[in-house]
Amino acid sequence: MRGPHETTKEQWYIEFVDETTTTEERLEQLLEKQADRSNVINTRSGDLDVLLQYLVETGQYESTADATRELLFKQLADEYPSLLETYVDLKNRHESDPLRNVLEDE
Picture 1 (cartoon, rainbow, N blue to C red):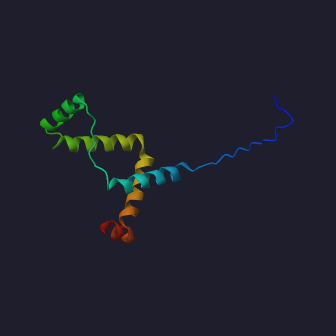
Picture 2: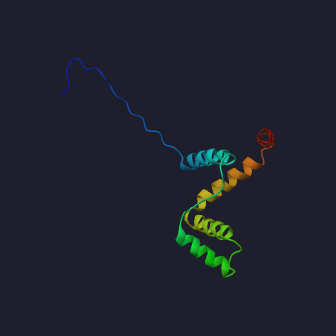
Picture 3: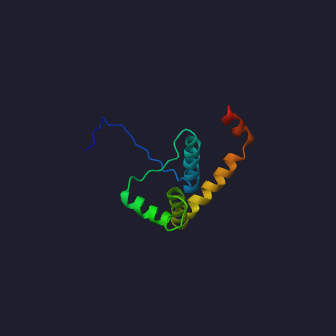
């Protein structure tokens, strides 16, 4: 119930955000943080280790790291092609920026 002493008024706004912009901004943040993080991905899975080791021992891959990278990139390309395209574009721009390269070297 509303009394005569209540003069509070609420206004709500909806902001429509382009998903590509949001994805690109988030990828850029992660790309910039990557220099300070380890690039090791650990699944802590004995099952995966056995299966990847099998692929290496049967000569399908040179190492479990190679197998993991190739299989993951294939899966990402199949499941999230627009994410990979956005990332590749962003990474190319990021790496070709001479000012950013000079600042990161210092």
